[in-house]
Amino acid sequence: MRVNYFLNVLGELLQRMKDPEAKYSIAVPDLVQFRRLWSRLPDLAKQTGGHITCIFMRANGEFDEVQ
Image (tube, rainbow, N blue to C red; front, side, top):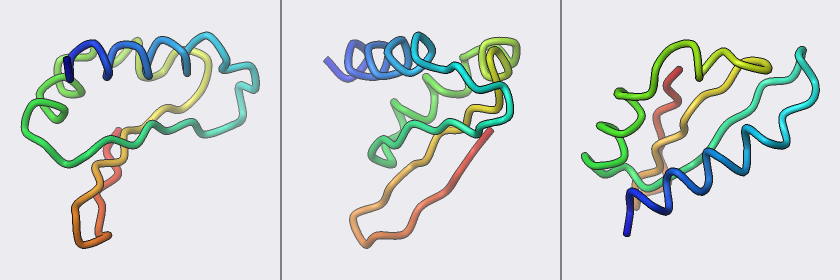
């Protein structure tokens, strides 16, 4: 289910990216599965249509932003 959630969020974002100067991000819980999915995403996909990052949120409110 998490894989489907991740892919759906990413797909929706990629479809709506219109401004090449904007920075786009998705935020997901800081779970090993989401980090693996992000790391497997090709760099070309992360650079398509602008700059895209993933924000990994922890329960305590802290986060990591990764390109």
